[in-house]
Length: 75
Image (cartoon, rainbow, N blue to C red; front, side, top):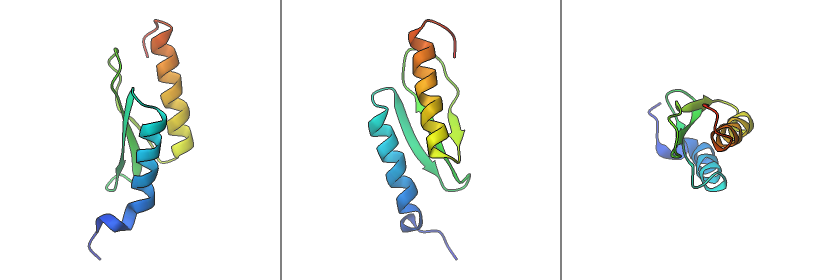
C-alpha cells in the first residue's frame, strides 16, 4: 500500500501541537520513514535534532534543552 499524508494525521497533528507548546524555540515534524517525531531547536545554541518515538519523552527533552541553554551550559 502506498503512503498517503492522511495515514499519519494524528502524528502530524501531535507534531504541530508540540511545536505550538514549545514555541518559539522548536519546530517539530513527524518523520513517516523513521516513525519518530523530530524536533529542531531554533534558539541561540547549536543543538542536534532530537528524535523520539515517544512524544512525552521528546517534550521532556525539549524542556531540558531550553533549561540547559538558559542556564548558560552547553546542551
